[in-house]
Length: 366
Image (cartoon, rainbow, N blue to C red; front, side, top):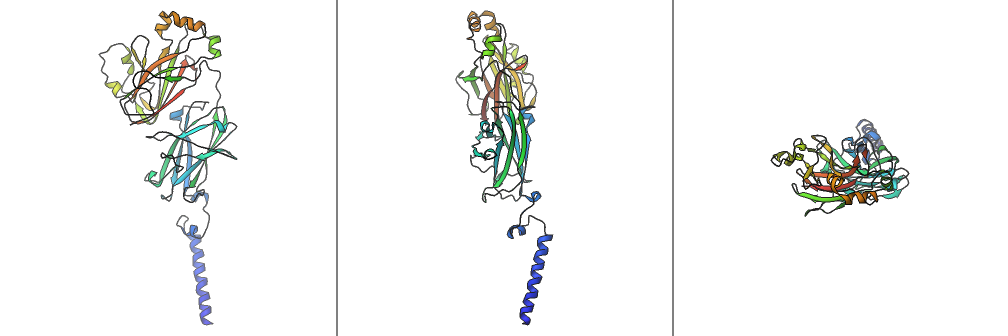
């Protein structure tokens, strides 16, 4: 009987000690997990944040113009492999196109399934798997980020929700990150979306080495609004925006290469991350002058259409215009002198701004 009493007292002491340990020890040491306890929101192993990348996007989101969001996570313990599930809510959420945008590899498309909250699916890793983040992706401080690009087909308000899951256990391991985006509508355009063609020996490619020139031609269909309103003699500009999340630099003022002086040293061109060169219509080359000396997004007017030669000397251009058969045309090339993942937007503008949707041209430069 004495032994039984002693055992009972020892058991009570052990139980009390264990309960004190549960109360006093900090969460995250594994004890609560062993006993099946739940973590509080502040103790979740993954903490997510969603941010609008204004340096890549500009100020507003518009239909058919890509916008970038950055998902940043803090992960502990570091051994976790995380799948981030993106859900988009909104009336036209099913028409949103999404892809992850790695800094040094091709984009990986989002493949959603229909969910009660809207289209839902994993933001895929560079290898195309649903493992958004692997342990080896983490920085020394335990943080990691993914850039992804969205293109909306319709104006409206959209709810962007990302939830982290443990790849191995298939369980939620953190509070969702949320961001509300308002996509503003556009009025009728003068031209439709531009279409690429071939120009020169080396056409556009999604993968290219540095210093290789990629040629292309470009045209755009006119709309009924153009045919009803635009008088002969009106001209437009092909405009190009270059986006690279790792940054770009401009060697110098590139307008010196548009003076016709062939003796100008080309060092500034070779020191420029992206060189955009266009046929001017007079068998000369016009170089795009970028709007700033460095940044993650550069823009500039590329060339005019109709060209000065067409407006001055071409009776066929006049006839095509007055009969409604004229279409804008341009031809040129792009050369990349710095490695990175680039997205080019080419579109038509007039003195009041954009008058066409953009064509999106993506390439990885190595």
